[in-house]
Amino acid sequence: MAARSIGSGTISFGLVSIPFKLYTATSAKSVSFNMLHAKCGSRMKQQYLCPVDNEIVDRKDMVKGFEHQRDSFVRFTEDELKSLEAARTNSLDLVEFVPLDTVDFLYVEKSYYLGPDKGGERAYRLLSESLQRTGRVAVGRYATRGKDNLVIVRPYKKGLVLHEVYYADEVRAFDEVETGGAFEFKQVEVELAEKLIAELAVAKFSPEKFKDEYAERVMAAVEKKVAGEEFVAQPEAPKAQIIDLLEALKRSVASVKKADNDAAAPPAEAPAAAEAPPPSESPGPKKAEPREKKSKKKAVV
Image 1 (cartoon, rainbow, N blue to C red):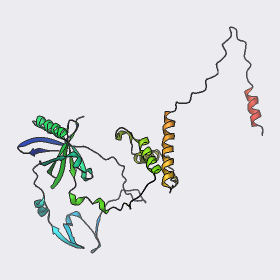
Image 2 (image 1 turned 135 degrees about the horizontal axis):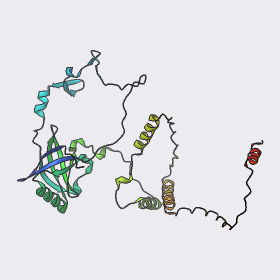
Image 3 (image 1 turned 180 degrees about the vertical axis):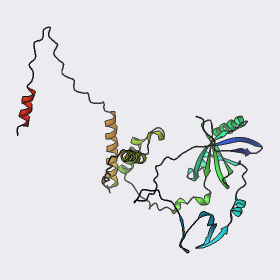
Image 4 (image 1 turned 120 degrees about the horizontal axis):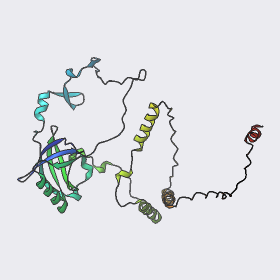
């Protein structure tokens, strides 16, 4: 089934205009829970309580406010907020083209597929292939949902992908993270670390190999409870802590090698069944085993 677009607009750079359609690229599938009343099992409803008047306030009696100082707010009406929104032009304006390797994808917030709209197929493909050949991506602005978004458009397969990205002041500096001092490592530690990486190295990232095991465990537990079966929570197995880095590396390399050997070992052959003797031309009557007698002997204590 063809994907359904969630928006449309026009890519503009220079005097070039490319009509496009916007498509969802990702869809989170994490499990979620509802809050229930433990007494009757009813789903709870969220309410807003005014702590000054000690009363529940309906949405129609609320206004929006911006906290400019602690516990001090500036009020805005809906009309005032609407007038501050970015113009809904549906125009994606590309303002510069930068080398792909200069983009830190820590800035990426959301991703969408871009497809050509009617009449824009040729220009769309030309932009995609030109970006691919030059190793560059486009930086632009896209006004949507009342917000002026900073975006990056990059070539992807035979088309384009749009990334909504954070502004610089929305990304914290890594310098704020404490990484410890400088360390000197033993040669054997360096060799074992590189060996462990080499043992676990694969040719490419294949996300289809991985599954959300937490979600699978939750759904299995749900099915058990729906079927009326008892779900017994398993205690978490204690993990052995290895303080020595060298010992941890040695054990890690050994465990990877063992797993590889187990996977590569041919399956053990099943023991050959004893061949039945060839039937004689005139088999005589076979004496039956006295089963009842044997069972009685087993019953004697």
